[in-house]
Amino acid sequence: MEENHWETFRGIDFGVAGEFKVKVEDEEARNRTDSTTFGLHQCVYTVGPVESQKMVKKGSLGNQISKEQFVFLASLNKHPNAFFVENYYMDGDGIGCLVVESLNGRFQSWLNYQVDTKNKQPSAPTLFTADGRMLPTLRTIILSLCSFVEHVLEKRWYPRHLTMDDLYLKMMNNQPTLKVLMSDVIQGTTPTRIASVWNHVKEIITHCCTLDNATLSGDSSSFYDFIGRQSKRVPLETYPDAWSYADKSAYLLLIMQEEMVMMKRYVQASGIVWPTEDGLIQPMLQLILDHDKTSTYDTDVPWDYIRLCRNVNKKFDVPKSVKAVIKDHIGFLKKMEEWTPMIWANLYETIGPLSLRR
Image: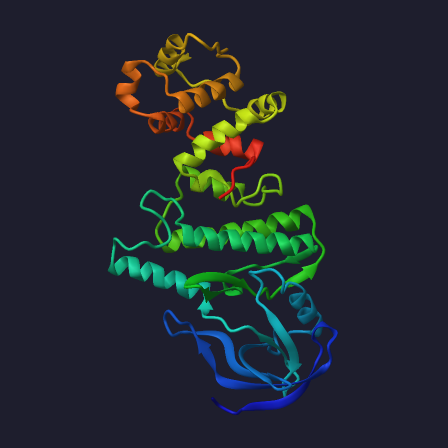
């Protein structure tokens, strides 16, 4: 390690004044995946008798890091995807610097590695499936980014230019965890500013798609479109793009367990209708309706369609001719998706997750 920087500074973090030492490596740290540099420097950070390995984010004459920026960034430390900021100091040239947690590299470098692995081993999992669904690791990273952005907006701060350069990764339990260090943030939010931030998030997803030559599928496309419209009642985390057929089956049951008047309104608002073909009820549905001697359904009422779906999914009491085609309740769920491709997204965005948790 080069001893080009070894001075004592007075700390200001969290109201605890005291001396600390920072010994900074001259050369920039390198991404673990491709050995390229990523704008941070390794350092030894000493507070009292405790010495630890950290990193330093240096400002520049054209991009100063102020004490006010440090205070703001440190206020985000409790969020799991915030770049944990330890302290702040001015170097010998009067340039503000941040002492931050150690990381493994940029998100961009990890993406490049995943795509390169796919090119060398076509069967290896990368970012998206062949049919355009986001794979779990990338989806978790995107959810982490959205959670962090929500946290910042709740504090009424506006990240003006959220880009790939603000995104880093740290390996935790052998899994990449997103860490965000925003470089351009001002106070105050407006609807226009909030929309702009979510567009930046979507641009990052689009960049991932372009890099992997992927086109988002229906479910993942709906997930993408819903970003920025999520709420505490209808969160992104449980969005149906990642549901299994067991989740879908459970969701139908949960809808029926809720207060019926309210659920009827939600289903009506979702825009779902009875599937038709050439102006008539889908032939398979008509066969099921004719077969059912215990229940009655109004094909002008969307709620009754969901009720029928729940009953078929639960009991699978269908004519033999239908059973020969769809085999089991999962086959019926697939038919629901064929008749109404966005059925789960439409229901979820209107109703929310209920008690379905992943």
